[in-house]
Image 1 (tube, one colour):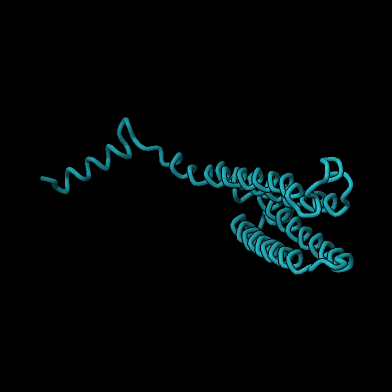
Image 2 (cartoon, rainbow, N blue to C red):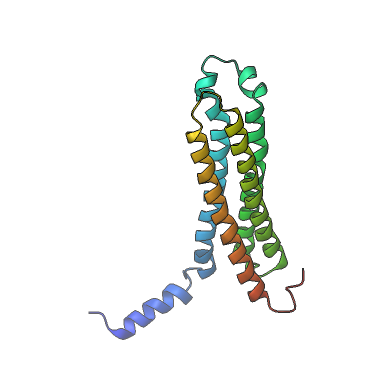
Length: 181
């Protein structure tokens, strides 16, 4: 039969005894999980960037050289993906700051600001890419490319907004003396 006293003793041994659960380790597990998710997103994006040109209808019978070195729009897409990977790197670093209990530091605020700028840069690259698609579509229907550009721009706008909100929260949490960066 369980009594209130036994439950208190069990709780004490669970959290304070020799085999106690380390609370700081439990708090770090979700952050490690999120860092792993960021890494997996980066690997998936890189794999997609390398795989997609091979299955594109235009490149059905093209050689590797023709696929990767004769398509200026593909080179533009690779250059436009750089801000995405920079933002992923900064997100990984920001999660590292949180894991080290250094979330309310100027470094974390700067990382979030970089994420915001990267998101805005992605939107700018997409707008220029959409203009290129609209001007050079010929007989092809540009609707698929335009829709993908709209989706990427919407996701980037959400990322920029979230980074801005988190940046403001961190600035407020740092206090008035540390906001001047």
